[in-house]
Image 1 (cartoon, rainbow, N blue to C red):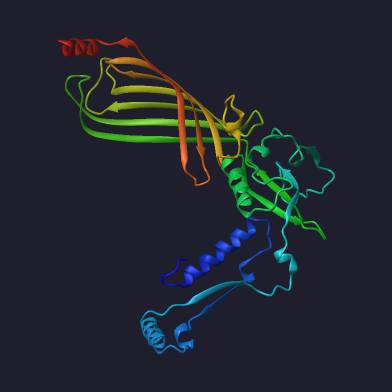
Image 2: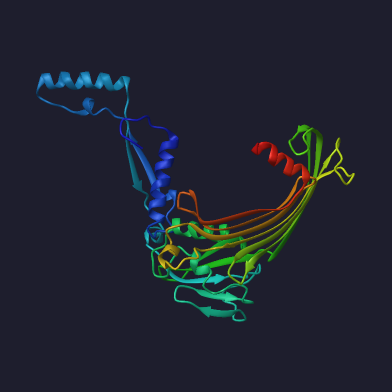
Amino acid sequence: MQKNTPVTKNAVLAESARLVNLFRNSGYYKFTADEIRVTGDTSIQALTSVGEDPFEELRLLTEANEKRNKPTIRLGFQLNNLPDSTKLEKFYINNIYVLPDYHPGDLYTDSSLNTHISPEYITKYHKKLFKFYIPGTNLYIKKGEAFSQAHYYKTINSFYKLGAWEGPSIDIVEKKDTNLLDLVIKLLPIKKYAFEGNIELSYSANTSTAITGSNSGNLLGLAGNISVTNRNLWQQAARMTNAVRVGVEFNTAHRNSNGTSINSREISYTNNILFPKFITPFKNLNGKKFLTKQSFININLSIINRVDFFAQQIFNDALGFNWTNARNHLGSYKPFNFDCIRIYKRYQHFVKHINFTTH
């Protein structure tokens, strides 16, 4: 809200929400909008003041008439009389419990769960599905710090964007007769392997190319894709996808030298690995500056045979980094990219075309 701007209900509610967030991000985790009372005063001060100078009185009356045409209000945001004193009590983080293989109904107090104690948090688990350091790379809340609602939601979003768990949640447990909070992070793992397959069909009409030196007619393409993804590679919540693509293109009007309608054939293999951190010798880059951090390695190998023209191999290898900041701006940097294209077979039509274009 700004001075000398129109007052709206939405503006008042937005200012109340801003104050609530300010309190909750400063440790007052029980503070809500119910603890704020908004008051307004629309009286014209010039009409309630009494002076001995008649000229001053005339000036005040003129000012009062102007304010009738453009009424103003003095707003005040005050604290209600709170029956619950804890609403204005500052709370601090006591212990952080992480359940990386959470089963619905699990309790962090269950003594049958395995326990691993790290400096900043305690891991309670059934089986060791993840390296113990993985949750710590996504924690924006720390033991001993004042509770922060912003860090609370930032931690949930970080675990969600990692892609190894579905529906991550954080329970807040108050320690009786203290201003301390235990946080219980419940992480339900998604299935480790994912399989995907699809079929593509394409059609291109009235195509003319230099491959045969004549109208090639209509092209009908058919391709199949199959992939398998490991969502927890090396117990580090890294993702590795292996994909194979096989495709064939038919010419509906022209046959090749073999007497078939096949215009081209393609087979390719792709391997993508995505790490949930920056793979770099500079450890400070893996701090909490970014909301998400990823390193990727992509490898692709393709063999394409253009019937009666040429056959080629394509190899690509790339390494880079992706990240998002607190404003959800996405950044990407690819310091290494290698491409190799090799034509290993040349048909007569191809040689004739090259000789024609060079002369």
